[in-house]
Each structure stands twice: as structure tokens, then as C-alpha cells.
Image (cartoon, rainbow, N blue to C red; front, side):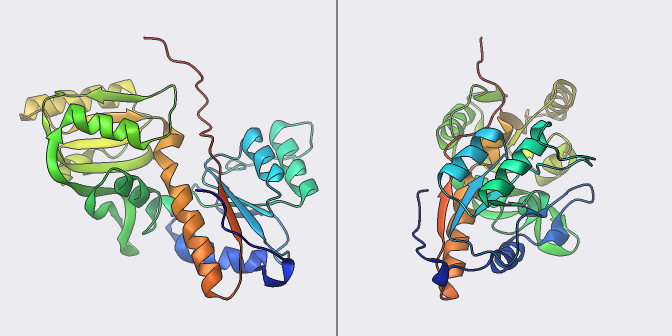
Length: 288
């Protein structure tokens, strides 16, 4: 997604107004108990003319946000998830905080609340793969329409090999690519997706009766046991497709940017939005 034009301070919303909109889309009450979401740095009274969306608050993305003259950087992964006792510029995270503050760029995080919310990370991934009738894989107790992951249906069956190619083409390129576990000629139509690390939800995936499961960060033992159980139970399903963590969450950025721009416009204000084109996957090469 490119930019949607916001012009002057006079027609710009305040940071507090933008946060109210984002919190409405991705309610903080949906976050996991260990998570840290919301405003990290910034003056709620400051005008917001340009908003930059990125999965990770890494230095390269921060520099790009500043180069775009962003007043606000919205990220998925928290910069300060674990407690810190210093944000001195002599530390790599402290240097990022100082850089943002010095440039006048606020920082806001929507993490597991954006994973679980309707119209959040999981929905964006499911839609990018052409899935319909999306429902939560693990519904939230407080909101049955929200929850972790999504289960959906392809318009028509396809082979696992063809579905893997569709997945590969739908995601931004990374050195990780797409790892596949299962019969490439097997049939796929009902699919579960979970952006980010998903090997803790194999029980829910099996209960959903899906043909394939798309997620990231699959470790050897959980994946091996899931495949062994699938073969033992008969049919060999669900098949597994493992992708780069940040790539699995990247489609949410464009959705969030569009929704924010539309909501601000509906309130009679204007804001420009820009999606970071770089996927901050830490791996730079893959030899096979």
C-alpha cells in the first residue's frame, strides 16, 4: 500500500484520536496477559499527519518511518515487551527510543490484540490466501467473534503442492520461504491459519478438522509429533505449512492502514498512511 494524502496540521487528528480509533479496531482487552500493547512514546495532543505501519520496530524500519516524516509509527511486535531499566542511547533499544523522540515520531503497538481482533492479523492472512467463511480457531471468551487464528474454506479443492505455491506467492519474499509437511498431491480445501508462532495450537487445529495448517516458527518436536499423529490417525491430515514469522503477519499492515485512513476521513480529518515494504526477517540466506 502506498500513501493516502493528509495535508496540514489543521485537518490532522491528534495522537489521542488516532489511538482511540486503533484501540477500537484492536481492543487492548484482547491481548494476552504477558503482552505489552498501546502507546510506547508520544504526546497524545500532537497532530498526526503521516502514519507508518511496520511489523517490527527494527532500526531500518524506524529510519524509513523518519525518512517518510511519519508522526506515528504503528508496529505489531513490541519494542519493550520485557522490562527494561534504562532507555539510554547506549543500548540498542534505548537508541531507537531516543531516535523516535528526537524526530517527533510516536510509537504504538498492536500485538496479540491485533492477532485476536476481528479484521486483524489472522483475518488478513486468511483473506490473502483466498479463504472464505473465516471463523476463530480458538474463540476469545470475551468475544466469540474474535480469537486466535482463523479457519476458512477455499472456493474449490486444490492439491497441497498448488496451495503451497499460492501461499508462497501471497507472502513477501524471505529466505525462509515455505516449508511443507505432507503429501503434495493431497487435497486441501479447509484451512487453518495463525500468523506468528503457532505450534501451541495443534489440539485446536485437529479439533477443527482442517486439511492444512499455515503458521510460523514450527519447532521440530511439535511438528514431528503432529505429523506422526496425523499418519497414525489415518489420512495424514492436517498438512503443515511453515512460513517466516513476520511474513505471516505482513498483510495486516495494509488492512490496518486502510481502515485507519477511512476512519479518520469519516471523522472529517485526513491522515497519510504508508506501509513498510521491508519484511524484517532476521534470516538473510537459506542453503539447501
